[in-house]
Image 1 (cartoon, rainbow, N blue to C red):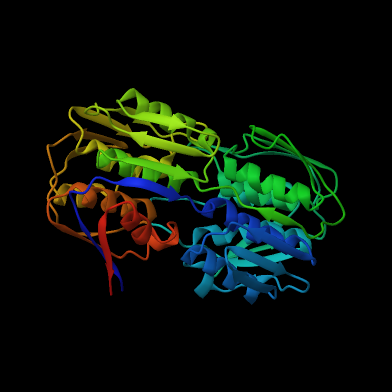
Image 2 (cartoon, one colour):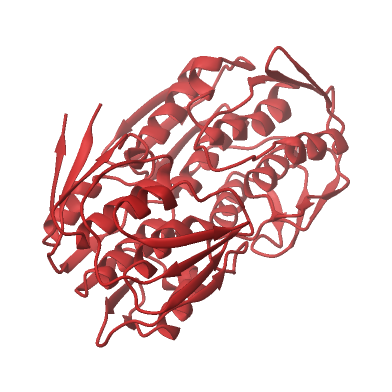
Length: 418
């Protein structure tokens, strides 16, 4: 098992090219199951989660190739059952449920795995599919969904933690081949959901309102093959911007959509960061000492939960008292004990982290518990005194393409050790 060894103290400077969005590519790959025709998808990041999804598609019967960031899928003949050994590794595997049900009338999928960041039930997905006419049961750790015909109707997908992204994806994909019109109320409006809807529309779907809280899908009889380019990964972009700020360097992130990070950028500006923005790039700098931050994570366009851990690392070395409240996944704080091992001063009260900035961190062996927590520990290592060993980096390989080589190109001292 690999680990990353990070020697702190270097200011990061230079340019970094952002990869395609993992959270956009995964449901788009699942959506290729909706047609027997060939789909070509560009700007797909080479990540372990992507490889898992491609393995699932192959198991289901699709012909798949992956080369130079381009995936070609032809799902001419498919089966409807996915194995536990594949789906247990990745929560996003649940997004094959809607496409399989819509195309085959049946889907059998093991309960998905993924990061340990708190309870993330799929009951909203299942309820949405039941409203469309599916009969859904759970048996032996598997979800069994069957429907002789899906019918469009009104589907409400709100939860106490906000809208569900993968739930919106699943219902939207299933509704493309349903009879009649489906209206999804309290839909997720993240850029990744919008990207999936645009992919489906290219396939011949009739979707309107994507990017808003109300999505309307008029069912069609069939979908066809298409060519599409995945949007850039806004969370990867935000992580490298934090790397620039925490090291007091100057980094330009390229191949990204600044509008996808508007809330994050505004909050960083409020504590003293400075950004120069172009059509598809942002340069971030720290002309003076940053100040503390009070932020609450929310669904898009609010502050992203996937940036919470990285901001905790930044605020741990920022003067003053910062208050970070996690409203999407209230238990998503497993990185805090590891940051405290490095000298961070953090108190956790319910879903709120109270962080008192310290002058510096000290290197320590730390354990990554999930994807974004591992990124936060690498960021902390960039400014800690000594060599920080980040273990279980298979988590970071799920969502950051070549993070060690990209950071080295910016001047970081980081190496991957077997």
